Amino acid sequence: MQPQQYQMGGYDRAITMFSPDGRLYQVEYAREAVKRGTTAVGIKCRSGVVLLVDKRVGSRLLEPSSIEKIFKIDEHIGVASSGLVGDARALVERARVEAQSNRITYGEPIDVETLSKKLCDHMQTYTLFGGARPYGTALLLAGVDIGADGKAH
Image (cartoon, rainbow, N blue to C red; front, side):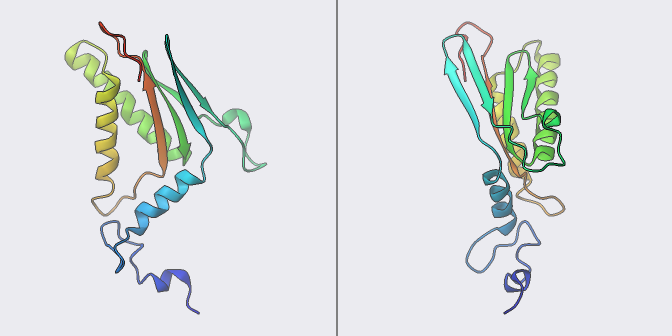
């Protein structure tokens, strides 16, 4: 029996190459990293949103207090992550830049939905081109839009 990588015929090396059965292995690997992550929950209430994460440590080599899975993006937006922590940190930094860019450009905080769309677009581009792999993290973006309606997302 041949090793798994030879059975795939190299279809797992390139992000944009479909296998004969129509699968993108790199996208599946990213999805598997998210599945192996811990649970993140968001609860919408009258006065805002609550984010909860399971910070279970899978290795005795890790210091539990060093693991961050909930991040502040802006004064009104937070995010919980599951999956690869390094990928989550990269996306959190991207979200913070987008939020600050919007504040500088338009003089107002970014809407939660707008930030969500910008992050989704950024994440999706990593499935289109070689030289990068898809993000192996899932983000639960939550916040309260500052404005007349004060809508919680």
